[in-house]
Amino acid sequence: MKDNIFFETLSGSTDFALFNLAENSGNHFIAFNYYKKYAESFWNTHTQDVKHCFPLEFKYEQNFSINGNVELYDEKAKIRINEGVLLRLYKSFYSILSIDHIIDTLSGTPDGSLQINNIYTFNDASPDYEYTFLLPINKERKIIAEVMAMFAIKFVILHELAHHLDGHVLYMKNYYNNETLSIIRRAREERILDIQTLEMDADAFAISQLINETIEFIQNDKLYTKHIKNPANLYYIFMISIHILFLVLHNEHKNTDSTYLPELIRSFIGLDCAKVNLTYKATDIIDETEISNLIKNSVLKANSLYNSVYGKIDFTSLENYDEHHMQSLRNNWKTLRNSLFPYAIAQLAY
Image (cartoon, rainbow, N blue to C red; front, side):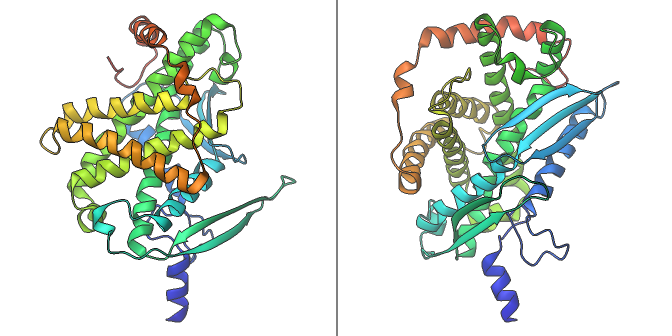
């Protein structure tokens, strides 16, 4: 009995927790298998009626940045997700829920955490990766942390899936004669507008699919009924999750030369996309005014939480926001969308 309590305290609380020490298979990091199955199931569902579709090859890379990669090679649609996507995002949300209850249903739960020091080792000559995070002792807080991590990690995976399903990779292969977007990102200046447009479309795809999942979550998931309890709470933690993800990416990329849109701007575009999706798909669940208030409050809360865990946010990238460039992206999408039609499997956004 004591062993069970010990394992429960040191383990996650959901099927998609980062780890479970009571797992009989010996593979305690259960999240890796969960998200691999999620990606494969999503792909199979969306390609089952498509003739001559390439099979998906989903693998994790021994890299601890929050990133993924796609390519079309050897007649396979390949997706690589860095292991750091899972390790670092769970670390973020476990640490956040150790110091803040976030939603009202957790207001009576105690602060308190265990400090987890872990060394991630490999079977080859790769250097060990050592990381430390706080794990909430309270089970309900662990559950909310895992739900928030799930939203952020699924966003990354869905973003990469979109590059295949929306025809980005196949379009680039035929138009630029390259089989991977990463090569194109280092290409000439005139191609950057296309890349940023495709990245914006991949973000929109991820948000749209996640909104679909939140609606199903409300209707069918016992975690929602027992721990979250109302749509406002769910969309509040969803929006915080997305903004925290982009804050972490912003901090990671702030000193690098990137062809992406600045992460903070991507976050605001993504949250606006969530509002549009909710307005069209969930009017019977939550009204538009409440959605607008949730976006504003979630951004402020996410900024505060990030400051508490990681330190002050550098907002200087927002000074480079150029509405004319954003309009160029919107106009470019209208043209690029037509070019993607022959290659897209999923329905393209308008």
